[in-house]
Length: 467
Image 1 (tube, rainbow, N blue to C red):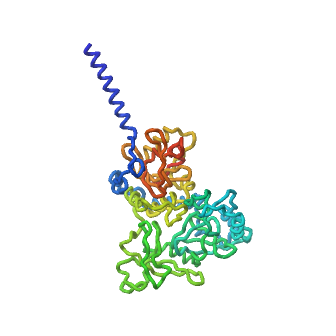
Image 2: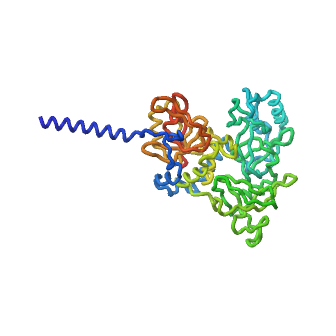
Image 3: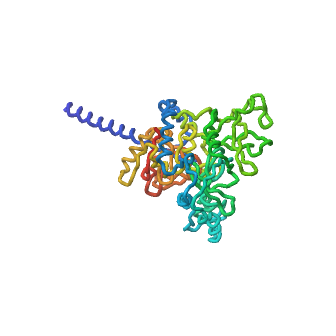
């Protein structure tokens, strides 16, 4: 009798222990604070919290040689990238027309302006006429240049902002991306009014304001791009020092990851643009002349602004610190609103560590230059959750139209930082709660709902690991 009792007690104890272990392996229920952002307290908004949880946070994940190999592979194999250093002396019309019409085709759906009014068909026709696609000659001579300021890349040669829904002005369907001061490019076509240039840059081809470009010789442009010594901008978006002497370079915004050479032509004891330079870095920046030609001129970046003598080491700590420098920045589709969108956010973070990524989520998710795991309808929910639970700091998780960066794990819950419009999740009573974010935000991954029936994990298309 005692033996049977002991056996039953032992069995019951084993079941209890097993159940406890199973519960411990599952993510714990998350609490919604006053903000409504599930599972987030002030502690999780501090990068130090996540760095402390990251194993071997300061160990180098990829050294400079490995990063250079990845960049080379992306440039060679990824069709969304453009090797503008090795373009021919002339380009065939079909190639140029292909670049232009990939973006600039007449919209098939109704669009709305910033006031919620329908964009008239006549206005669309005028924009299409200004693109003069039929005016591309049989052979095009590319003209090399540089962006002289942060400048929008547009799908059409117009500043008209167009939206899919009246009153929803966060996603301008004519906005594509942005170039930064010192970015090289080639002009392959111009608009009818001469105010817009269709440019091809290493990561994107689109329309750009012609007066944001300075034209020069290719050898001089790429010599400047490759020049040493240089500074890499590691802050979110610091400005150069105010200078009335050169207004075009005064308080010029320099976004994260931009590499700019130092101007070594000025003696250390001589002023730059009317002031001492010993408290700043003297950068060499592109300047557009009255005739549109390129020259280089010194400008100061204060030493107390975040920059480095080289790209930052690719470590888990740096991934976290760099990502959190954008925390709270307003969502900006195509880098609009002086911000960035989800793919722009992750690419700017990795760019500060030397990794050059394709511009858009679809290209990043499947780029042949990266190690990625693709997911299809054949992959079960359980398999996807298992993969999510194994995510590491810096991993990039893609769903249709969106990307998230993993920053760590708490009690079985993977957490991400991402530039996202909002957060939807099921409450304890089964009802759906939706919180508008519209900013770089920290959230848990697993509770995020893609729609009323599917989670973000259910819609996961790819995991990219920069390794």
